[in-house]
Image (cartoon, rainbow, N blue to C red; front, side, top):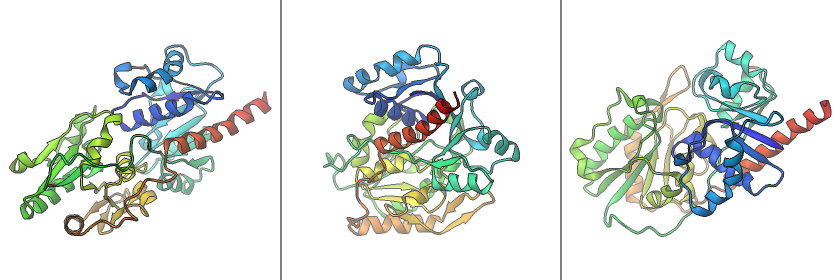
Length: 346
């Protein structure tokens, strides 16, 4: 079965990591010939030499034309939009969206044989609009990279808070800043590690992310390739994600959980798929889109709890069954159904 991914493969942002890990999982599967129809930039792929070697067939196929008999998967976002040349001829769509879908979007989505929704929330919204060609397949983590292990204790005696995800209002970094100002003023040992870099810096325009008064206690790690992120996460005492909306499950939050880092999540949208594995921020003000702005006081209260008490062992565990191996297998089975129907029609 030939599969063509309609998005860029990368180690530096969510969609890219999604595609990269599908390619790695399918590299050892002789029944799947995967490639990407997006122009491939090898500088975007930061993996170890053995993974790079395993990716050679994928890379070779990706530099050629898309096979006419490949099952093309379109990458869609808000309102079902995507890059037209990658959507053309696609029969399957993978979608992560945070805004209500227009009637025109619903009509466009009806033409796909299958829609892969990135969260239970997205799947429910699609089905509520009358779409029946929907299957929820969650993203995963690579447990060979993201797993509990001893930290190096690079900041002894400090309480280190991690905040990740590209800086934009939807991700709620402004709420992190407000909460950290209060918390850091109370606790001299508090530090904040931020991984807010993205290829789209304009998304942060208008956000108050100024922490100059705590400059010596804030570390911006910049653009970290996914394969090098786990050691950063394991140095942290808690991870904080007061995101207003997540079309997926929040990949960085999943990786924190897999590393055994106590993780605080807003109780909304795609985060709800992780509700049994994390501490949830329940006090929120929801807008017409279903986005939730978490209460800053509750964020601070939860940080105080993490600072004061040992985290419950049940909460600090590997994200069982949420691995890229599981994701790739589920997606393969879904595509085989499409492939089988095509063969019968032929």
